[in-house]
Image 1 (cartoon, one colour):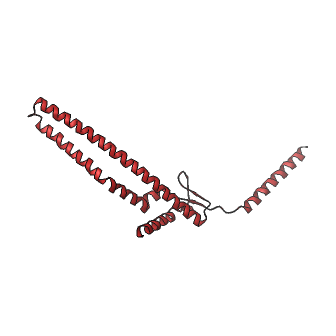
Image 2: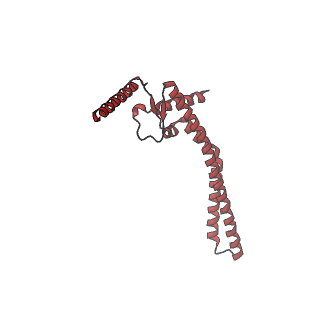
Image 3: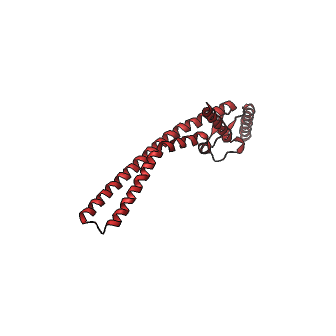
Length: 179
């Protein structure tokens, strides 16, 4: 009885092994690639251009904030220099005005920071969409079945397509700039 069960189990295992081997033999080769999105974000001309546009857009407001900071510093220094010759009321008024100016500066700095962050996030979303489309275009043209990005423990240089995608981004940027 024991040998009959052993023979059935052994036959079953051999059959499963043969099925698995024939399945692997008939399976198609899967083409997998890896792309480093952080590198694309750092090195693509689209990213550089987006940052330049943001800097140009916010440069006037940044200059205003810097000028207000300089004015406030000058007022503080003026009050410190003149504190001995000011009367109590004049001193109190100057300090109140200084506090109002500080609050206004803080408000403008906060608004500026929020606006910059909002626009940067919008630009980043748009840029990520462009990068993703370029990766998909390259993967489709080259016959990739799977392209992975972040969260990969290890990726061989042989499957890293970052440089090729970056070249495509540069070519697309050149075509956009040239026309």
